[in-house]
Image (cartoon, rainbow, N blue to C red; front, side, top):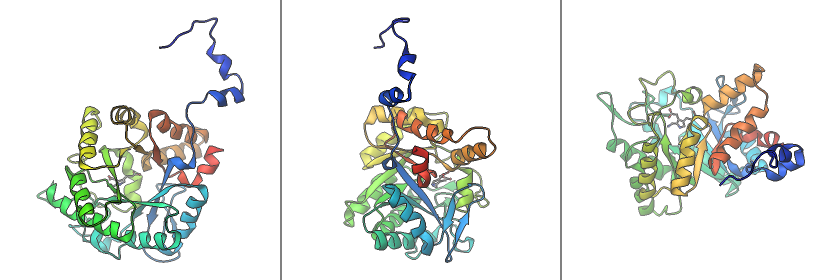
Length: 329
Ligand code: PBG
């Protein structure tokens, strides 16, 4: 209940001074709130800028420590690995996803060997970085197959778990995959590998720069509207989350972030479980470009991030995570 009446109550009184604003603040940011996505490329000694994402780079395995050192020093709890697979290794079935020498597998092993348990590793479970058509699943006669795709995702999950991945993040939006992956993990003694389900993942135009970063942009045929969610819907997000909780998800992700704060809030209120938000590539690039063009100032970054906390997110996947010290200051 909101009580009080002007002129005896003046809310500007507590906004007048910086110390007072600090006292009454409801939300803050700390490095503990962040997950840092890292893009991987083949080769050695390369750190390659992604043209559609200024300030974000792809790293070869032998250069990974450069960015992981930084994440650990900043106190970021987890990194998320994304591969840019060579076109020659992509095929219709996404076979490379099951290669134990693929970029992600090599990176997991490298990070675990070097840093042990100092930082968590999260990996997407989906086929789009590996398929020649850029879709997250197998295709037959232009239809993305659900159950057949899950069989591959189970093997991808088991492989990544075996390599040492701590958190599997199915981002494919196939129906029923969380339950089947959980079951396979448990059967293979990976009871402690966590599942972060991209439960409410919308078919969004805001993923554009990411698809460029992992090299699936040119190859993607059509769109992902038959498996990712329709952005006109919100009740449906609650059904997706409810199913995934039943199937064994430890945490859920809402994606994209900023246009979907209402979804974060209602999931958090209804289900009381850890909810993560993904400030996706398009959001990042929009903000960066606007800052470079001096349309908005740098404070917009903090503002965009604290909005997720206000909506109820426990953590944020953000391409800003590696610069969070400067943003928080
Ligand atoms: C793949 C995946 C996507 C993103 C994360 N995992 C793209 C997509 O679904 O096409 C997007 C992340 C971003 O835009 O930053 N399943």
